[in-house]
Amino acid sequence: MRSYILINGLSEQSLPVTDRGLAYGHGLFETVAVNLSVPIAWQDHLERLTEGAKRLAIPLPVNIQQLLEQDLIALLGLQQDVPQRQVLKITITRGCGGRGYAVDEAVPINRIVQLNPFPEYPDQPSQKGVAVTQCQTRLALSPQLAGMKHLNRLEQVLARAEWNDARIREGLVLDGEGFLVEGTMSNLFWSQGGNLYTPRLDRCGVKGIVRQKIISIAEQNGIAVHEGLYTPDSLADADEVFVCNSIIAIWPVTRFNCDQRQYPQWGVGPITRMLQSRLSAEGIY
Ligand SMILES: Cc1ncc(COP(=O)(O)O)c(C=O)c1O
Image (cartoon, rainbow, N blue to C red):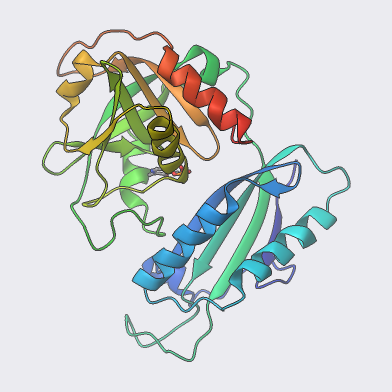
């Protein structure tokens, strides 16, 4: 299956080399699951994009939602058979040029919208669980950028390059002070004694859309959610562990491979199952 791409609403494949996304990572992206042509958690993705754009002083057009929806409709229109599930990737950059780092205010943003095939996971990681490893790459503390899905993803690239054992599906990443932050492509939760725990993300890391949904669902179901600074040792006493993002939804973690210490093996527990079924009821796989 091929990918379908629009750049600024036009059927293009390339951008000028002066694009600031390429030069400086000056931009944002969103990865959105599309089910039966409907983008899942669409308003949440738009809100994160809009908030990130404000923080990076990227002037989004006032009708950005309409433009992106038109792009999606146009891309779907190019497909002969529309697959049930696809991945919509939106990239917004601060446009081309400027004098070095200085921005030329007159330059418009660039908008890249792609429809990609949904990844297949024949080994059913969301049912059977996955093994994760601990990455050596540390995330720098950067409150100014924390939470955003900006285009500077070099730490994730380095962390993901640390393993190539296909049985390991995710790597957990710590910050420079040794506290858990997230996975290379996901957010992290664990439960203990009926409470949920997740690292706070105001110093580094990406504030995931699914993470936010999970926090809301848990709270609606009377499960207290604690956001804090936790070391990997916290996982030693966890009852259930899982990672999440907009494409995988929830993958239960059954093993944590770490050189420093032994961790228990976990089953796929009731809190994880409840959250999975609530997300799937909302159309989020
Ligand atoms: C580094 C990182 N953290 C967290 C997430 C989860 O974000 P979301 O739930 O919005 O997909 C992602 C998603 O790609 C990610 O790359």
